[in-house]
Length: 127
Length: 127
DNA sequence: ATAATTGTATATATGGTAGTTATACAATTA
DNA sequence: TAATTGTATAACTACCATATATACAATTAT
Image: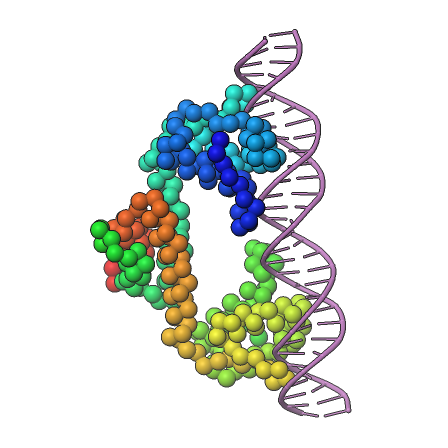
């Protein structure tokens, strides 16, 4: 499995792993039902503790990308793109909510927030 | 000086202090030129280290609400409401920028972001 | 059956960061 | 010149995230 981990940048190893696997799933390199390397094998390959690979797989499982079964292994789930998009939307909504609460506190109205949004998003076909 | 600090909730003491003083400045309880209690006196009153009151005052100074002078004391600055608003706007822009970057990554277009914004902001005279 | 392989669960360092504090220093005022 | 004010440096503590070791449970292969 082609995974590169780097100690520079301070990004946790388990996140580097889960993000790279997530990318492979999203771009089709890994497909539904594919078996992932076992936590222990991947750990040996990457020369890290297998508890760290487990942590990475837990992230992927939490986000609905894979499923793991004791004694069998870990497998790519059917990718529910709708679900994925919904999750992303929820995170975006959280950020916007923060911004809106802060805006309301200091009297920034909806119109102004819209202008900020348009400005930051930039030109867009759907603009 | 009427300041209440609570150990519940985990909010740092220095933030509880700076936020309460900030509120007093913004609602007019404290006016331009008013002298704040000395860091040491406030610390005794609140039964905390005066380094913590200093930390609180540093927050206020960093945000442009007060000024401190060695040997003299700390004083409320002329409140530049424009400046305050600008600073709040900058933080809001930061949050919206995060949301927009994430949105672009997963194909959420500007129109959809606008809808989210409108929904979260809710009904508004300027809507 | 039984050994090998796979994932799970609990406990334990380890490192960094945030909050708070103590203590020594500098400037102003009484 | 003593008292009061803010400043600067360092250290202590608590907490959290990361990574690890080790024992356990389920499945598969022999």
